[in-house]
Image 1 (cartoon, rainbow, N blue to C red):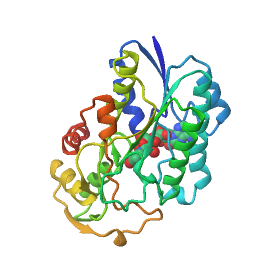
Image 2: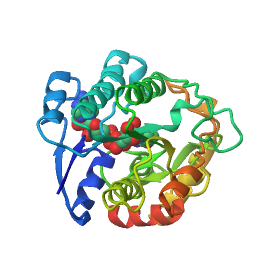
Image 3: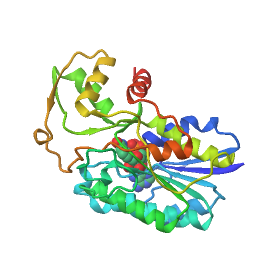
Image 4: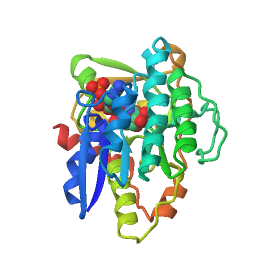
Length: 289
Ligand SMILES: NC(=O)c1ccc[n+]([C@@H]2O[C@H](COP(=O)([O-])OP(=O)(O)OC[C@H]3O[C@@H](n4cnc5c(N)ncnc54)[C@H](OP(=O)(O)O)[C@@H]3O)[C@@H](O)[C@H]2O)c1
């Protein structure tokens, strides 16, 4: 029986992993949340990891308040960089493999082609910079790690763009939504499936654990405006949606204009079929309904 630790199990991704863990054979899962383990307490973090002979550690914690991070840099560093390094160190000491999640915000968004894993990084925000630094520190502290960069994550739980658009669409007659930022949504359930597939493949020795950085989002490309239209249409919400430019919706942290991720590496390495964003949106919206 392999021991697997999921840190940050109450977030969007963590909850989806928790929902699916019973389907994984020959594995015993342990879960921590902010209440049971604050990762900024690095002593507790190290002790928790070293207490059990874990084979895999999945880190789903993050400081994800992108705008607030601009004024709360120290806390964002503690959670997105320092804690990630400590997870790597403690995991290395017990010979555990780490799966950690990063973001499309490590890129500047000036590309016109989907970003590959080795594309030059240039984060434009504190959040993006702290996540990038977390990637580097993790790979140094535990080279036996997989880092999955994802984008536009949503689920039926927690706060996310999909749920915000449903709420605003119900409250207002008209919504202005940015049409000049292009990316790909990711249903957290699909990402959870991909992570568990990587672990199960390693446990069954069908596909080995290949450390490194990978990109994962749903298939397809969309703007926030088009994404909103799809959400409201599916939910039968008749609010008017007006396309607006990024300059008309200023935020403390700049967002990449283009952050489509190239997923060829994870698909080829792990023989993964990734769902199209509209199909996954339908699944999530039927849960929200
Ligand atoms: N959300 C996105 O659009 C997006 C896009 C690209 C990449 N990602 C990455 O994907 C991963 C999963 O994101 P997500 O959307 O699932 O995030 P999330 O829903 O915000 O979950 C993060 C979890 O971490 C917990 N947490 C925060 N500070 C903590 C601390 N000091 N100690 C322990 N736990 C702490 C949070 O607890 P509380 O909720 O109680 O604070 C929350 O349960 C993250 O690495 C994120 O950077 C997300």
